[in-house]
Image: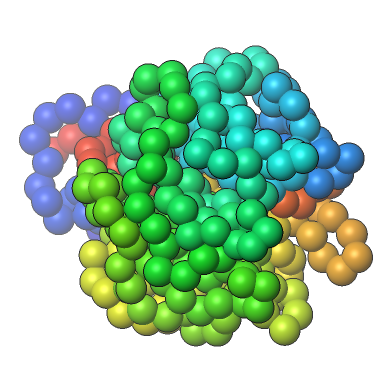
Length: 328
């Protein structure tokens, strides 16, 4: 591989092989750099923390949600992070500008108040799916992230379920993996984000799992942690464009469930979660392109589980390259 210094100017003409080598090696960052973790079950937390995905270290305070709540399903665009606050339950959607620390503002409402929804997005549209509506629901609704307002009906999951966290996305597809009904599920559904309609079966996880969370590049989704017959540390992956079953990826550093995850397309990070019987402040990461074990990243500002996460570099946003590399 050529030597790629880390620089901000990536203009010029690139060989395709050099682009691939730089991305796979982590020298050329794809997408954004920041991940925000919001809400949680430690006293119905309203805290928002942030990290810079390319730089290991502890999270810093970003601001506060409009109200505290656990299971705050989340996702992000290039400029905004979104959190569905699950308190009481609530149907309120909060948002923040990812690059400017400060408190969240009201965006609108989801279709119905419910706990434990899944979240996914590309660069324009964000989707919430499923949830604990007593009984569990199969509803998928969406927002246009640049336009304040209430969510609109999108379609239905193949199975009504809850507790399936942040979900894998490409610029065109969203996957919804696992969950509980109340028993754990191994189902993977997918939708085409730009096309309103019901979800379609994609394949199965390696095991039935709930309360897990995902990160993704533009081509690969990694679904990690969660609860099967007990708390697990394992992760599995799928190629988003190709229907089929998930494949074992490796293990993160600590078994837990109710964590939240996002990525910058090369590096996936998981923050917080629940062990038995306590919440944790763990943040760990892995390289999405290479199977293997996770690595310690740092810690949240406090312990909490059942939180949401929004980032500005996940796989659904990576329809172009930006960051650092070297010209040829």
